[in-house]
Length: 286
Image (tube, rainbow, N blue to C red; front, top):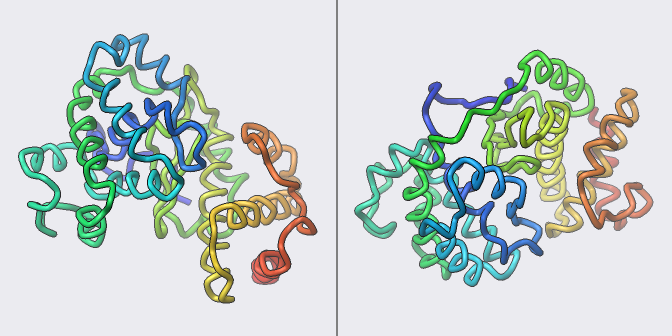
């Protein structure tokens, strides 16, 4: 596992930071699994930049919330975060709609047609504009303060319970805070911070969870198991818990797990037979 931290030049704002900064303000999505609505992040930004109601952010967040009313819709809107690597490149395209962009304008060309053809394209365009408008506010926020030695130590411990993590690129996207995202071998997690959190231990375990989700997804597809969000997440939680227990990190994993609400039983026996077989296949490969 590479040290969680920007995989880009110091001082450069990642476009995903701006996208998730906006999405963290979308209160109407709070009940959906892919939501990143975060009252703690909203309060932190308000302390340093004033309330979102004083900017266009509040109305943009309402528009996005009215459009992204299902798990699938919100997940689709969030794909914008991977389109550009840095905010400057996103800003360079601000005068054109998505359907006017070419593959050469973006960093993930494969995503462009998906976003252009999306039934939620209007909301995606609003999200993109809101992210660009919030760039100055975001850049002026105080940096996250944390001890990098704590993060290195947490990473070393967690890797023992997460073999797949070693092959992933891990980057911090601060507005994700307690959450994470994975796409391919690229993992985004919140940034450790002594002020609004999370802890270095939490960030490391979140990265491990994202790597485990990607692993279980791949194993399920190999086995021909239809993939749906809830059983996939359940299987990943069970697999990581068992691995953590094997290396005497069960207590640390449980501390991370405690931030989640409404969890199913973290027990292999609670899994559907097909997903239990997927977990067992992963454990045999360890």
